[in-house]
Image 1 (cartoon, rainbow, N blue to C red):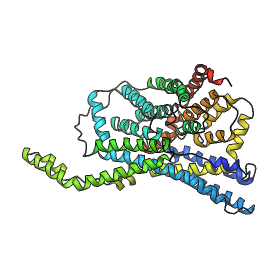
Image 2: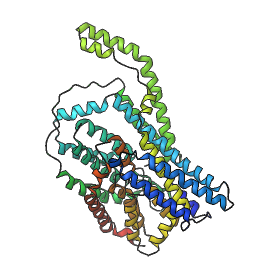
Image 3: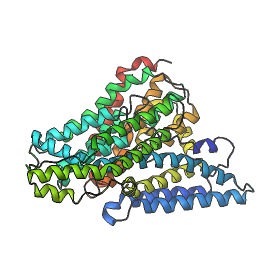
Image 4: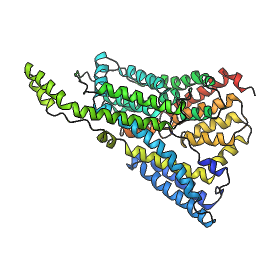
Length: 468
């Protein structure tokens, strides 16, 4: 993701209270794990995933603030909270714009048209499985993994509407592909971006992770494809007419992504600036669609009257103006609030000192390879961004090969669980009832096999980088 740089661990490393052994720290850690247990049980207990983490985040920061007040340090915790909140604000606005564009494209029937095209082409379920996965891998290398996953999931849900088993399996495949595709280029994932910005690894060296990333995707995908029935979606022939402006909105979305990349890579500005500017593009275009709607309808009605198309006339009478804010309202707010809770929980735990403690205990053994592999596995539960920042804060003495390894493992480790990456969390909201935590978890063994294969490939293929 090109939208968030975590830094709560820095406070723990620069003079704040170390609360890791205190009752406050232990209670906070327990609250976080309890909240995550409830998130994992969402499918069974039908409790929205945002609720437990929101409550846990609030309690954790109240406990931290109370402890600092008792220590005679008023305002210190408030400053740390505001810092973490600022980081989340960038994330939320970035995701909100992406979701708004996705909703706008859906309202303009772009995904309906793509579904109809795929059905007319006669793609089987197995072909759809591979097409969606490969496209997710390619697109996520220059766009963020969450937006990519949401795009491909929308198409799959339209093509295989109602087929819960296929949608779940394909969503798992899309999450793996989106995470793997962003691991070998700085703009593809925030973890690669952080390492690159730190000046530890040069831009060109990241491309050595391309083959390990491909392996990470292909190994589980090949196994999962064996469980895809080689049949075809229901052959429902339909003529889908794109609503006015659909392709132009898609173009504006691409310009929005380009604006975010330019802001960050050329101007050293937060990428959310480019995304919010892109929302302005959409608002201006929405205004154009509204003011030009009467003239457009008049022309279409005149044409339908000339040919006597009564059905066309009825459909034109039901047209409603395009409204950007209605698209904003349809964003997956449960997902956005879940991110707030997770970010603030992890920010609090980092401020307490747990992330620094974790890094110290792992790298203190002297086995950097094991530490990097374990941290990658942990990123499936704790977001990879604070994990990577903790490593950068500690600055362990590692070769370029090890820095590339932690970049790879932190980037793809989140694929092990549906809650381990932004792509997985977003799809749990978008494909609610189809793609679930347990539905993803049952494929964890083959995903772990791909994880191990990608690590082995990197250790073998890029051995030259491990020479200190």
